[in-house]
Image 1 (spheres, rainbow, N blue to C red):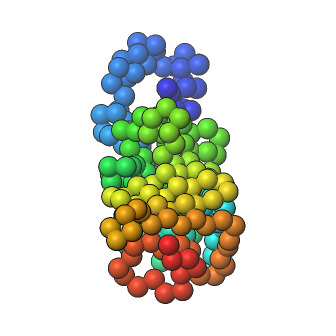
Image 2 (image 1 turned 30 degrees about the vertical axis):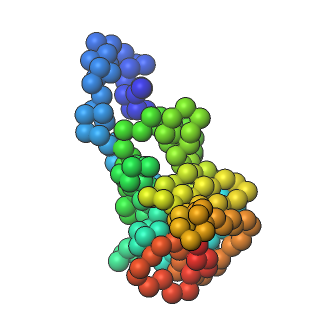
Length: 209
């Protein structure tokens, strides 16, 4: 697998085959455990975050579309210079950070079973047919989490284009985990779209899971 620059150099005969084969035996991303930083291009005053069937619109202000255990899962902010800034923290099922975007700079762990970045869609799989999360980047002002299975301890969030399901935590008095589902909804101008298991104040949240 070659990046666009090295693919062009290989095609033009500027990058010798033996160097490609040597690099393929020990890719730099595998050695470091993470990808090289990749810039995503977001700017403007108005922005939109889609999570499954939910739509969250922000206008010139902070928006965390999903705030889970006091961590921004997917959010937009503005830097001190007024630049629109995308921030994402997606963890694998062991709790380790699988993908991080800080101020429009993305890196992802190379420890996942499969990472596929085709066109505008980034798909990370835990195993064959098992999508950990899928993101659709639509710069300069929109991002979608189209599918995901996010797990933290005994709580699971399952996201599909038509529904968001939250399973857990387990309730001993009932003998089974708490379950709830969310379908078509949207917020506009709020600081928090969906909030789950947070201890810090999250005033004005659209949905408390």
